[in-house]
Image 1 (cartoon, one colour):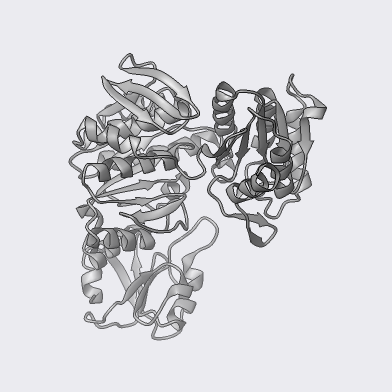
Image 2: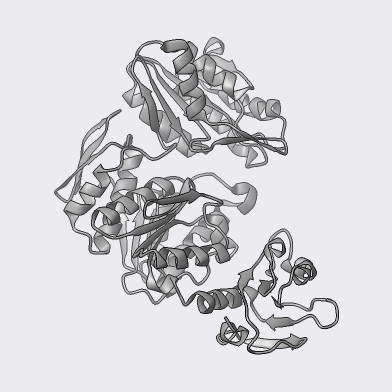
Length: 490
C-alpha cells in the first residue's frame, strides 16, 4: 500500500528525510528483527525498553521509514515521521493497511484471572453450533474455524492481532473471541480494537510482579469495559461475575456507561442439579444445561458464555447444544484417566485457582485426594506460601515439586511453598513429599495411588514445556502421567 494512504488518518507533527507519497509499504512491524525491505517501523515506547533504540537496525533491514514520538538520531537521509502517540498512529496505520478487518468482525474480549480460556472455548463452540464461523485467540492455541496454530501470547502484539483479524475475515469468520490479558490492556496492545462484547470472570492474586498492586491490576482489567463503552459497537454486551468482589465493583462503576449483565449463582434462575466427575447439570432461566466440564467454577464460565451468546442473538437451544459439545478444555480440570483411580491435569497456578480446583476435587473424590504442584520462578513470590497452605488444608497427600523455575533455584521456591504447607492444621509430615524433579513427583504419585484416589496435577495444564534456567525443555504433565500409568497400572 502507498505510504500516503497508510498515513492519511494519522496526525503527523514533523518529518525528517524524504519519501515519495507513492512509496510502497509491504509490512508494518514493531520488532526490528522482523523488518524487511519496504517495512514501516513503529518505534513504540515500552515498559522495559524503547523502540527508538532499534530504529537504526530496522533501517538496515530495509525499512522505508520509522514512525516515532521523540527525536531519534539516525544516519543522514533516514526517513522519520514524528507523531504525538505512536500507539494511536499504529492502530490507524494497521486499520488502513488491512482495510479495517476488526470493524467487520464481532469481537468479544474475555478478561479475568481465571476462566478466560474455558469461557473462550465455550463461546467458540456456541457460535459454531449456531452456524457462525468463529476465530479464537487464547492461551492454549489460536483458531480460525477448525484451523489451529500455536499460541504465542495470551494476547499478542497489535501487528499480529490485525494480521490475524484480516486472515480470519478472509476465511469467512463472523465472530472473533479473544482472551484479553491485563498486560495487554495496560501496555495498550488492544487499544483501538472495536469490541462488541466483554466478559469479566474474576480477579484473584496473580501478576503482581508486573502490576505491583491489586488496584493497578483491577484498573487494567477495567480498561476492557471502558473501551467497550467508548466504542462504536452496536451490541455492547457486558457480562460480569458479581459473585466476585471486584466484579461487583466493576459492575457498579460501569453501570452508568453500559448495560451490565450481572452473573451470580445466587440467582434463583440458576438451578444446579448435579456436579460429578462426569460434568455438571443445571438450568439457566429454564434452559437445561448438560456439560462434561467439571466443577462449580465451570458453572460460572458456562453462565457467562451463555449470557453473552444470548446478547448476540443466539437461540437458547443452540447455546445449550454448543455447551454440550465440549468434552473438555485442554489442561483445565482435564480428566486424562479414570479407571482404578482418577487423574486430572489443571492449569491452576494462583492461590484462588488452586483453592477452587482442590475444593472441586475434594467434593468429587471417592478415597484420597492427592495434589502435585509447584510455583513458577521469576513471578510473584508472595503467592507461594498461601498455595502451600491451601494444598495442605484440602488434599490428603501433597507432592511439592518444580513448575517453571526459570532463573530461580527450585529448592528456594519449594522452601517458600513448604513454609505455607507447615502452617496448615492438617499438615502431616508423612503425607507431604518434597520431590524437586517434576517427572519423579508425578511418577511417585501415580505409582502410590490406590483404587478410588483422585490425583490433581496442577500448575502447567496445557503447557508442553518446562523452563529451567535459560532452557525451554519439552515436558507435558499429561504425557508424563499417562506414561507412568502405562508403566505401573497396565
